[in-house]
Every structure is written in structure tokens, then in C-alpha cells.
Image (cartoon, rainbow, N blue to C red; front, side, top):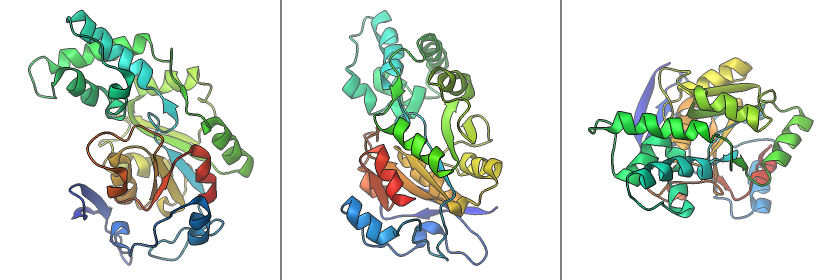
Length: 271
């Protein structure tokens, strides 16, 4: 399916699918921005989104993993600080690490050592980081408050839900097992399962294909700008988890998503 890059009012690029007879989703008119849970219900109604084409009932919910379903920053931070301590550097506080946790090894190594892919020694540093992380994969990791209750409500409503993450399957699969979630998602798409990862739409399109649900009938909850970009490119409605990590590049209100939530349970107002 063809896609193109379109410029938004922010400094980021968003990928918009070009479908016959349908405008790119990020070219739609902007509706009134929600100010409260009550205001949001008025805008959306009980089960409908205001899409640029005919409204559709949401039939599935997809989630990012790190910073959206699970608070993985403590264990990711432990791996980074082990590296720093081994090199005579002081450990970074969790509050600092949290801002880059959704960016994985690339973001955390950049934070901890000012090193990036392509730099001398980066690949070795990345391999060491991942080995350290694997040793302590779920020691201090837990679901965010309210996530367990949200997933239970989705199950009770008969709404399938899945996980789409850039985290490699090497870590995603055992982590979900350790958190007791391995048998519950309708699909799990990890980093490496598609030729391109987020911000490209490939992982989200794969997930909707596995569930046999049209992308326009899915919403995607994430905490990173790439989550919004991938969701828009796939033709899904993005929702930003403001309780997540969010990064430090720009304010989430500028990412191009219409809807943001402060707590996981607020997502139920959209369904």
C-alpha cells in the first residue's frame, strides 16, 4: 500500500497512507480538543470516533509496551547504570532515565554515554546493555497502576487487544510471561517481526492483519511520538498515554494525536 510523508505543524514528519477515496488521516479537520473526560464523551459518543470518513465502531485496542502497559524503566535503568558504574561514572537517577526509556538501547546509551549508532564502540556497548537487561528483565518492572483493571474490562467487553512494540522478541516474549500476560493478547508484534519498525506503519498493519480487523477499527495507545506517527500512517486513531515516559524532544500535545489520557482507565471512555 503506498504511503507518503506529510509535514504537520510540528517539526516532525508523519507518515500518511494514501488510500483511494480516503483522505490521509492526518489531513482531517481538527475537532474540538478534549478538556475533560465528560467533554471527551460528548465529542466521541459511547462507541464512535469522528473519523474523516464514515464513523466506525472500535473493534480492537493495540498497546505499546514500554511506558504504556509496563513500567520497565527501573530495569532498563539498572542495565545502563551497571555500564556507567563499570566505567567509573555515577549512576543516573530514575527520573532522568525515564525520559529515554521508550527509546530503548539507542536512547539510553545516548543518554548515558552520548553515543549513537555508527559511532565507534556503539555495537559492543549495545550488546553489553542488552545482556545486562536480560539478566534483570522483570526484577522491578510492573504494570502501570490501572492497566490490569483496563485489560480486565476489555476482556469482559469482548474487545480483543494486542501489543505492538519495537522491543525485540528476545525480551518481549519472556517479559510477558513473567508478567502473566503471555496468553491474553490477541496478537503480539515485536521489533524485528516486520521489515520496518515504528514510526513506520508495518507493525500496526501486521497486528490488525493477524486480528483480521480493519486498521480504521483499531486504536493504538502509546507514549512516544513514533507511536503516533505509526498509528496515523496505519490509518488508526492514536491515543497518547500521558502517564508514560513521553521522551524529552517535544510536548506530546504537538505530536498530531487528538486524544490524550492521564490514566489507563480513561481509555474506556473511548470504547
